[in-house]
Image 1 (cartoon, rainbow, N blue to C red):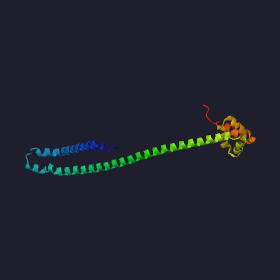
Image 2: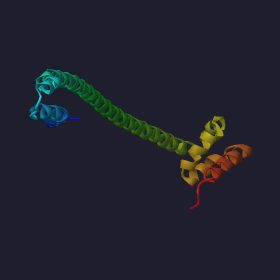
Image 3: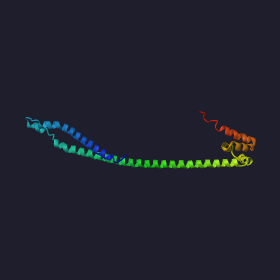
Image 4: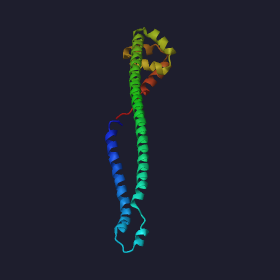
Length: 192
């Protein structure tokens, strides 16, 4: 929330408050008006004049005091609202700063993950190329010690001629297991 917009709002609020005070005064005057009319009416007996002891001037100090009390309450409430608006503005600014920091951290993390993924991909591609260039019997010795899932990943990336030559040097049960893993990798992939 912008604090610049609070100035016209204060002016409008003060106008409304003054209008309410005036309306309150008019209502009180309407209540006092019958007493004025009674006092102004000519009477035959002076005793009736004494009975009308309602002095409109005596209500004025009470009315003024009530208006001043109400004005003090409104000023206090307005000060509270101003403090609350300032607190909200500070909180909103902090949230905005935290969101900016979070967005920046997310961007940095995404960049780091992208670098790591690219580096991993490059390392795997390089290793695949190394295994393809090795003599098939030597590469087969290495593949015999690997986890089947891991080995299947390399075989999936190799050129068919290279992977065939290496598999030919593996024990038949291991070559079969690697083939099953390779064939089953996309078995559950959606077809449409």
